Amino acid sequence: MAALLLFACAAACATTGDAALPGVREAQDMAGRGQLRGQARRPVQKQQEQEQQEQQAPAPPKLKQTPEQRLAAAQRWGLDQAPLVAPPPPGDKPRLTTPEWADQGPDLIPAPAHVPTDQKIAFLTIDDGAAKDREFLDMVRDLQIPLSAFLTDESAAEDYGYFRDLHALGVSIQNHTLHHPQMNHISEDEQYTEICGQQDILEREIGVRPTLFRPPFGDFDADTLAVAEECGARAAPLWNEEAFADRMDFRHDDQRFHPGDIILTHFNGPKAWGGTMCDMLRTVLRKVTEQGYALARLEDYA
Ligand SMILES: [Zn+2]
Image 1 (cartoon, rainbow, N blue to C red):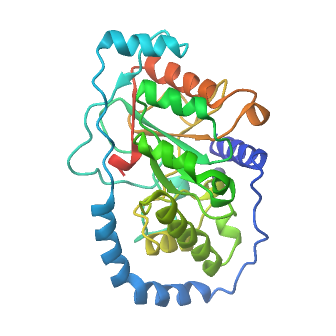
Image 2: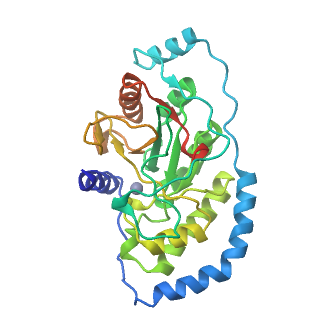
């Protein structure tokens, strides 16, 4: 199932025009060199992390809506039920873990596919940035949907204004590299450029330095996680479900959400997957709501 999901991501990413950089595997002493570089920069990075914690913008206050208004808004967008509202996030973020199938060794930042919680919440995360659908902005605003976006510069760069508008709705903007390479096929220095380079661009374009990094295709190695931490990421979220315009794929055998699951989808349109971003959001909202789940914002838990 994992392979299937990864394949699906690869296919979706490919349809958005993302292409892996030609990778060059460097000599094995690269890891040692990286460690030295990491140690030299770590004190600066810790200081940056503290500044980032302070920089983290809280979600803007939501307009109070009555249940009747929430239902009316949902119906305007073709839904029978209003989306459920998540309880407030915990004061202390839970300790994240990496699933066995993605483990790259100790002392690395976590690469979680879910967030440990007892609450029936799930996290919708949207990758790349190819389709910039204005109707989707309206739907997110009307229904007050918490989201996280992981942007690749090559997909998002033509209109960062779209993503600033999304960010103004409380959507957290996170890092997905400059050029969408398969990270475990490029050198550690190239990985550094891909991640830190996009950190700098997003900080300039959005005004907030990301704290989460998602590896393209879900492929990475130990160097990726070390470099991501060096660039200021505190986790590298993976996923347990993938959403499309007309369906969802589940990693769990029971084909249901589990508490804290991370859902992957992409900024795609009719050409890539036969439906719009709004169709995708309707599909996700119907599925989570019928299973008693609310969407929450990953950045508040990870
Ligand atoms: Zn991607």
